[in-house]
Amino acid sequence: MNKKLIHWLKASVIILGWSLTPVIGDYLVDQTSQLTAYQLSFFRYFIAAVAIYIILMIQKDVSNKDIIQSVKKKWKQYIIVSIPSAFMPVLLFLAVNSTTASTASFLLNSNIILIPIIAFFIIKERITKRYFIGLVIALLGVFFVVFDENLLDLSNLTLGSVGGNLLALGSGLCWALYTVFLKKFFSDENPLLVTFLSLLLGSIYLVFFAFLIPPVNMSVNLLGIFLIIVIAVLATAFAYSFWLDILSYLSTTETGIIQALVPIFSVIWSVSFLGEGDTVTYFFGIGAVLIIASIIIVERRKEKPEITDEKSIKES
Image (tube, rainbow, N blue to C red; front, side, top):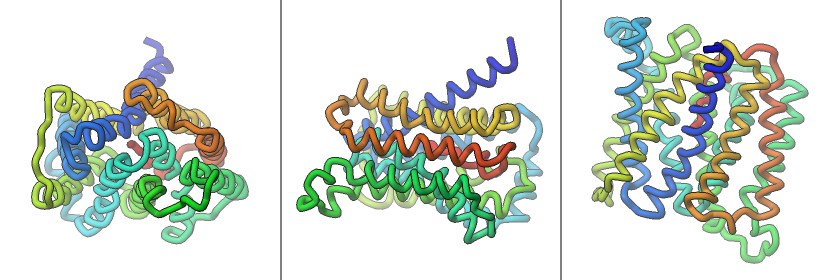
């Protein structure tokens, strides 16, 4: 089979998995209350960590000895990087309690705009003119998406009315922090190994919140179990692995298109499966277009993908 075709098939898995993540989260956490945001985040990360470990062992690029040595060498850095990683999905799944999966997906994927800002302060990366233009466009888009129909009547504007949107934006911020910390601490490590350890450690953090903080009851049906496996294996383990693989073959423009397609498909799934069609307003549409444009502009700022791009695996 043609290699280019294989790479785009992998890209299709990435788009499918990441675009389904907020939709599945909305269904399991908000619509059916089968799991709390913390519980879903825990199962997603723990199952994904197991799946990625199996991938590492099959590929034989990393041994158990390599994993232990990496932890011993950089255990403090792993603790730092796994904190924003762990709470990225938590904030996303908390957000869908108050906002739509479509809105949450767009705001989460705005992390590609936040990454260079954080990198400027933490690792002193220069902000280019192209990025600045993309940032201005993105901020305008985020403004429209966050405030949405409230722009028609600002007198009704309350923190509660935009709280879910702010949580989704916070999820994107966590992922941006995770990305920059990865570049600062782990640029010389195997990306899949680091992903495995950060997911595993993140799942350990989430055990406390998932099973010790009320409510802790779960009522997961067969469909719920299937969706948990989809979000953990397809949207996390496979999507992360495929993303790291295709970055060496696709241009930054193509990777930018992939990231821009994720929230678009989230809207399609949300309308089709969650009945969110009546929540897609003109303001949301304007903001969505601006965010997509900003993603493409920012992703085209360099000729070759860097670890910054490699690690912005949002997900979702």
